Image 1: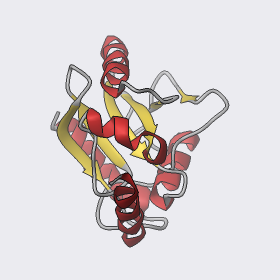
Image 2: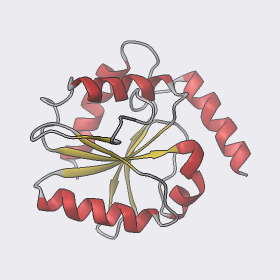
Image 3: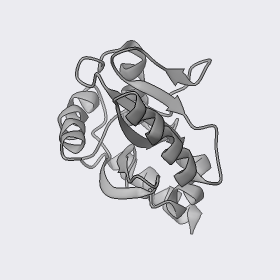
Image 4: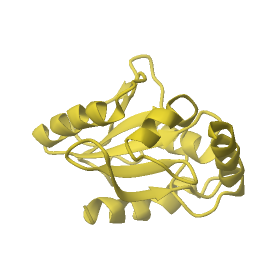
Length: 164
């Protein structure tokens, strides 16, 4: 089942239906992109209990006056890569000054993400969590390939956050 899901995700990402953005799984030496204002990105090191990890990140985000999104991407996904690079460069900080992202790897974490309700046909996936750390069902997924990916996702991401 997982192989089929992964293959479908690969095909879907390659087809670049409408969706989210570019940027594989953000990685830096620390695994965290942080600033006082702008996007704060924390990469999940991998866990068997996604809901608990998300709940802890959500508690911290709320304490900091921030909105938390769960992100699922992959290193091979072009839109994921583009989004990640835009975050690293600070290009989205002005648009999302109080956003925190907890990132997961679609290849590594698919099974445990599914157990917490974080599923999608396409990646990247951006999902709003419930207070218990499970998926709320409010999410956006996928994106176009190429330079337009980040610009394509930005208004959709803004709508997701504002509708929370």
